[in-house]
Length: 249
Image (cartoon, rainbow, N blue to C red; front, side, top):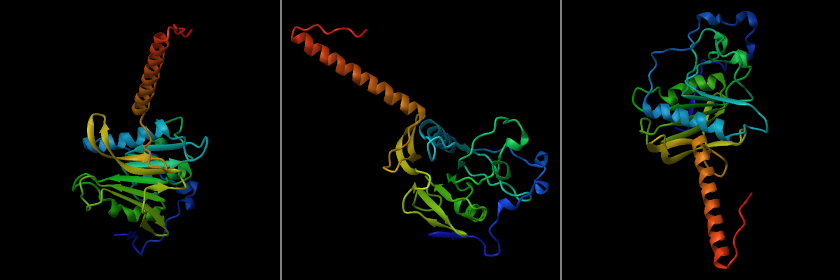
């Protein structure tokens, strides 16, 4: 399938048409649900995507803020339930100071003033919400990019599908690079938090994955160890020549 059409009866929805008197009563909206269940892989995959971006991405431009979270409802309509992708990314947006206010519990586009740029769905079993089935809502609302990662082949043989919105439909991208964001996605085989699997990772244009905080710390420690070993070898060579190396003060 190269594109998922939205139902012809629906017209593209414009959130800008909302005016203050038509905004919902937030006290009546369900913005969180304690009964929702995930699984080990999905929880780790979500954490990997969120943490690595905060650790290693400066945003779409110098000093540009962004927010990325998992299992957060995207409210776009007064009378419709929220979209709940596994991961949502919004650039030029930031979390409010008062996170305990009910209106800040979810991503309400009338509050943030913009749509998210990227939604990610993780398909892990037959009970997972099917990514393609949610395309209609994502496209209708106007979210530019949609990513479906399917590590167990529930939707077919391809473990990764990346889409860009084109009018009222999504078209497949041939790669995982989003030029407008300066950010991409790729599949990466490795160990994360003790679990070896194929993971969806953020990457740069060359395909280099954005490291987690732990990976950055490990790389820094490795560089420090290598520098110390080089210094020790140089000191040994100097001593062999009869020169006592000076201690760094």
